[in-house]
Amino acid sequence: MSTIDDELIAALQDDGRASYSALATRLGVPRGTVSERLKALTESGRVRIVAAADPAFLGETCSAHVSIAGRGELSEVIEHLRGRDDIPLVSAISGAQDLVVEVRAADQDALFDVLAWIRSFEQVARISTVLYNDILRGSFVSDYGGGGRIDAIDSELVELLRHDGRMSYRDLAARVRLSPTAVRARVRRMVDGRILRISAVVTHTARAGRTKVGVGLHLGADDQAVIDQLMGWPEAEFAALTIGAFDLIATLSSGVPGEVFARLDELKGLAGVAGMETWFHLQTLKEDYSRAI
Image (tube, rainbow, N blue to C red; front, side, top):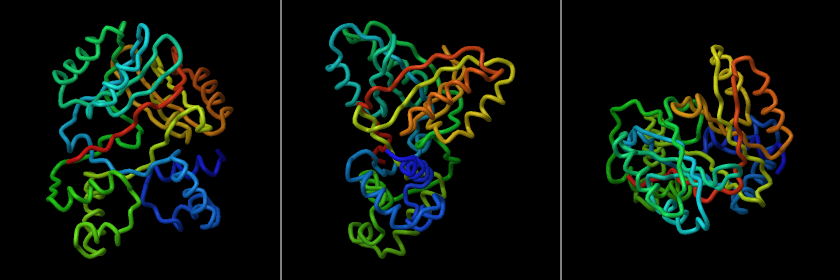
């Protein structure tokens, strides 16, 4: 995967419906190059452009990162994890743990119920849970300020965009029996009202040509300097301040492995980093933040 692909993915994670012209301007390449690379990424299945309702709008106010160490074959556990709407992410990782999942729940009581359910499997030896206190970066994090309203047509549009975030306004209009102008206005209202986010999801497999590393940081007194540095890196796909085993969890991803390893070395050298643990994401088994409203 080329550096242009990395830059294109980053731009689409910011705005999944950005026009070819806007993407070309941001990347400093011809419009035709953007069209060609985006077509290659989506048709290969390496990148999906999807819409997702804001978790807070859906009533999900509590999120956690859960590491799972198993005993024996975990395929059955994985299938059960993949089947739950409140577990949007399941990833196979290297190291002492076997899986990482993300849980989104209405409150801590609901979160506790999910954790108890995970521990109930005979194949689960132990779990380690870290609560997200403040998600600093991510494609589908909460940014909802309240006061939003949707109707049945809005819900239908969200359902269509969940499967194809770049479906044209003309095609959307035909499906909901409104004019393209009216549909555009509805989608923009939901996006501007932070009810809806349209972004790129990268499928991570051995054939994807990307290196993806999870990082758990123990921070010292100069934590803000670490945050500022991390947030300036295009390789930082996800970052959150946490409560539990780590003070901050991040995901670094790139089509150029050397870039990720260089960032890890930079993190180790920061005065505000008191300790660091890493794990490789071997394969994304589920990444689906889109939920029906």
